[in-house]
Length: 289
Image 1 (cartoon, rainbow, N blue to C red):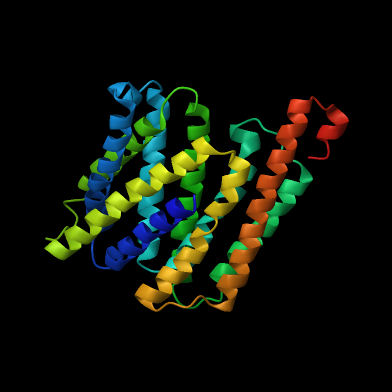
Image 2: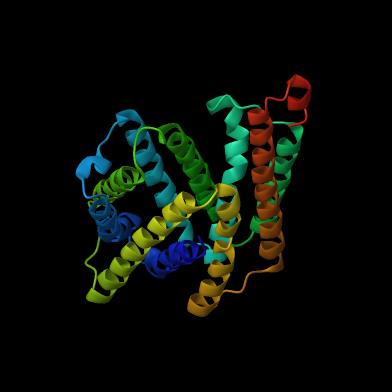
């Protein structure tokens, strides 16, 4: 999880290098095309194409569309916001998951998790520092990306018993390529060898990063590996400083701490509730969730 988080954040940093000068669709086509190479490794390890079989067509279509929306919004945010700010705002994802769980997953959410959702969104406001200056309106892009990614993860949760990780990665990558190609009439420009080469590296790094994260979840309980996912904030701050000279402001540091604390608490409560459910606790216990 540590290695996967570092590589996925490096992909975002590479993407940010070109996000202001190249159309988003053009970036995604090149990056996603080269992300297919690690997916081929997954298929080769399985020694069969059965792992790519699409069993839940509606689920795959919904997941691919949401992946496309999330990625477009996130990369657009990279063009206007520092890397660390953009990533920090996307950690509102667990807050959206909790808020939407009663409607989409028929899950009961207790007052503790609702309180954590409120606190987490206060943290997002602290990060964006809505004072009316700068490009803070651009924070809407990573926030929209977090919402779309949340809906994607909910769809993924429903598909975990039908389709494989390799198939989900493949069809999501194809959706990004096709969605990017659809924007070609709107101002694409010829890329140089350096741009193509660096985006190609970013695509392959992204594919490897996703593979490592998948292996982390396959090799250990989620309760062990999920907290390490939050190290992307540290990597984003490091890459942002080394590559772009960005230094996170006090509002970003404090707001990120609030959002991460809220997200980790929500995850902790989900573990507690899951254990109680498996233990068969009664209604009086459920009220404390």
